[in-house]
Amino acid sequence: MIQRIQRAAERLQRKFATKGIILMYHRVAEKDIDPWSLCVTPQHFAEQLEVVRRLTYPVSLARLIQFHRNGSIPDRAVAVTFDDGYANNLYNAKPLLESYNLPATVFVAAGYIGKSREFWWDELDQVLLQPGRLPDQLDLQINEDAHHWELGAAADYPEDDYHRDFDCRTQQRQPSARLAFYFSVWRHLQPLLVEQQQQALDDIIAWSGIKPIARSTHRSLTLSELCTLERGGLLEVGAHTVTHPLLSAHNTALQRDEIQRSKVLLEDVVGHPVTSFSYPYGAYTKETTALIREAEFKCACSTVKTAVWQRSDRFQLPRCDGKDWNGEEFEKQLLMWFQS
Image (cartoon, rainbow, N blue to C red; front, side, top):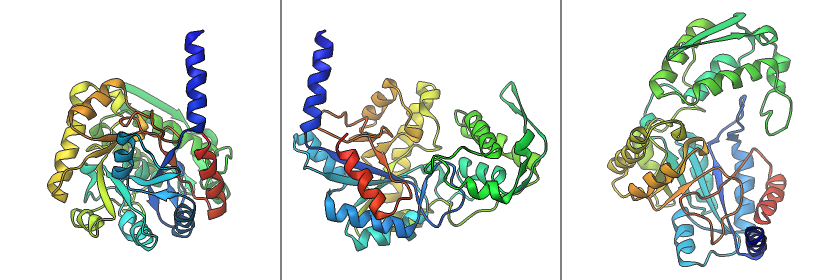
């Protein structure tokens, strides 16, 4: 009974508390198939920034954390963040952020800087989500486990299905058989170590007969581009591990190495302390948050979709993901988040 009363009191307190929103983006580019709804077009991104500038109190993530620690989050404070470290954050997002004078934090997976191969999930969609036909069966040996897929209807992927699958999650459409097959393979690859992911991808590429190419819309930042990203002081770099593992699936030693080494690698490049972190896939445990504190980060961002308020844990900060909405759609979502 006492716990229920306490929870009810906290909900009431939260309802009337001043709140901030941390926005999460990934890619700003023209749309291709986007199974995880990670891409926002430059036009829509500009419209969303206009809404942020007009309706909110824009702050950097570092400033929001300072307000949080001081117990004084400004009403409708908004901080912008990006995950992974795509090159289009520099070429497409930064000029728009500068035009609206909006700060942002870019969380970079340090091991992908300058890498010729795309992030594993992007390479997987390039192989599995192109119109055409794939073999009827897929067999993968992952560690000592054998995995088998009968593709059935997923073997054929006509143009009509391909276009219907564009951003199906945002549009809340039922995925095609091919897209469902992609999600199934993705789930098996997600918890693996990066070497195991790359081996599995190589096996899938050989099986499919499709050789992926490096797409300008999906490539990661280079070393020089990372430094250029911070030039001017409006954008800052945060850490996002080295190889983008599912931290909650791995032991303490690997988690510690991924967290601490990402900080060191990025600080060597940008030449100043890197103080913020975001969890790959939004996945972490209590042990992970303790490792973040041990590495002397000042905050860490999750993917829990709600507002930040005074009692939010700064090592489990919620974020609201920006989809490819126009300005009007985004404004409705933003106002809903502030009411959460």
